[in-house]
Amino acid sequence: MPYFNPVWLMHINTAMHRRVLRIALPMVAAAISAPLPGIVDTALLGHLEDVRYLSAVAAGTTALGLLIWTFSFLRMGTTSVTAQALGAQDDPRNRLVLAQSLVLATAIGLLLVVLQTPALTLILAAIAPPPESAALALSYCSIRILGAPATLGTFCLIGWLIGNQKARLTLALMLVTNATNIVLDLIFILGLDLHSDGAAWASLIAEYLGFALGLWLAFGLQARLAGSLQPTQLRQLHRYRSLFTVNGHLLIRTACLVFAFAFFTANGARQGAEVLAANAILMELFFLLAFALDGFAHAAEALTGHAVGARDSDTFYAVCRTTCLWGVAIAGAVTALYLVFSASIIGLFTDIPDVATTAARFFPWLATIPLVAVGGFMFDGIFLGAGRTRPMLYIMLVAVLLVFIPVWYATRTLGNHGLWLAFVIFMASRTLMMGAAFAWISRRGWTRDSAEV
Image 1: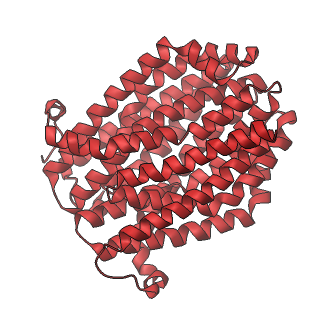
Image 2: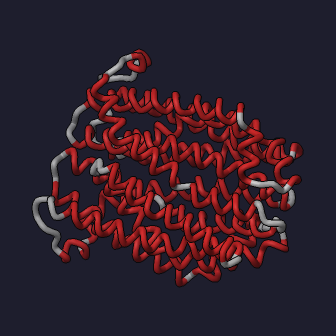
């Protein structure tokens, strides 16, 4: 298909649905499991008498997000390059990508551990959690940051497994890691009464266990690939070119996205502990939606990347059509679920009256997000798999700097309502701009060299 035509949304390809679902369903299950430790943290701490612990974890998680999730491009970049290597049947490249990504992840992770004190102090000062929660937040972060090498390494392993269309192995890895985290949460928070520090220790131990399991799975799969890895290849910088190009765009793009979430949390924190805690609950529900949609976005990454590597335009558009249809269906279902069961959902997270009442007041904003944000999630997967990371960067810059922040300042007199309004418009703008970029690139051809765009 040489150009974009909305009619292709109506086509049904049963074989492609099955192919997408073989990857997407395990990834949806894996993705939904990802926020469960955070949900359990929120639920356990939200039922304690003192709101300080919940506020501390909310602020601490945001601070760590600025450090750790800024480097989540390691997962995305690995998926993109791996999927294209698989489509081109280039086993040596497939093998090398993982090794290169793990080298980068280890170096960055160790650097974050070394620089943790100034970095965490500066970020928490910018977030400005309530004074009664600040010390607890710093303690939580100081424990969690020790897991940076394992967390970033696991990003690479998951990206490599997705790129090789090994969705079930990715599911197994994430389930074991997250189940371990939840069990340790119960032991450390309830059993040992360690509160927010207990949540941090549970996550740290689970992260290293998951990294070890991921290495074992990846080494087993690499044994089936043709050729062998030469250590000298890891010291030759020119071999990192494609990975550096993709990751460079994704680094800035991800930093902008993480900044947007940090900006949201910081401005909520300035409105008091109850608003901070309520927003933390609503954000956990947003992340649950995000991870569910990411299951199909991951399928889009793996299959569009494979199609681009194989120079198969027809398959590329079939993947786009199928994943978008599933994404819209999921978004509609989640919106209906949030509208019907809002009170019950809030009750699962907290029984602190002020926090529950505050969360209910702003819950309608959360319910509007799935339908306005779904396009952004699906297009992210398509652009990433195809290696079109430059448009992703430009669109995120515009959405954050020219949409989200200006709208917030224009509506800040509305308080937390203005903050949520700005967030919803931010998500909608990404969908619109990425849709326009998809149509533009479709006229030029997706299976051409991505460096042309």
